[in-house]
Length: 177
Ligand code: IMP
Ligand code: MG
Image 1 (tube, helix red, strand yellow):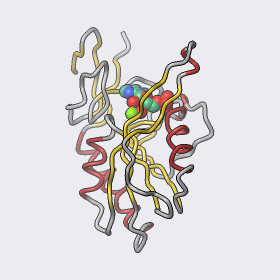
Image 2 (image 1 turned 90 degrees about the horizontal axis):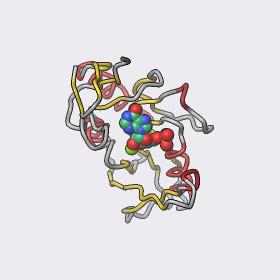
Image 3 (image 1 turned 90 degrees about the vertical axis):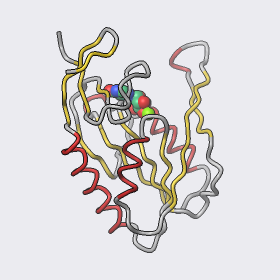
């Protein structure tokens, strides 16, 4: 168990299991993208560990770049708009694979997808380490999913609680009290 500020978390996915699954996803991508020289677009901060481990197992020619999301808050929280920043590589005509840590409601990935599609890539797919099917509110269906998990708050392996926990090699879920 780990304690981060006021919350206690227990192991959900040990790093050995994560490693096995990430290698399997990479193997699938190696097969699907031979001759396509995909451009991976990793969404920071949460995806940094997943992106690094995934890419170490990609053995076809490829490129990777990193983007961040900035939020512009409207007058109401529901009006918050996010925008991709840092995408300098030309993506027109490229085969793009977006790398995310987690798809929860799907709102973030839907906006990222819209942003990327506007730039006319030849194809776009999403690789997410985690998916919470019960939390999904948007019609998004990531092509590469590491693990489907229950609708619990998780930390570790890049994911944070209030900035903490990104360094943990395992993934932890919030402990019910
Ligand atoms: P969505 O827009 O609701 O799909 O949320 C996506 C973003 O929220 C992710 O990229 C994470 O940064 C964050 N997030 C969602 N669920 C969790 C969680 O369980 N732990 C940590 N961050 C989360
Ligand atoms: Mg994120």
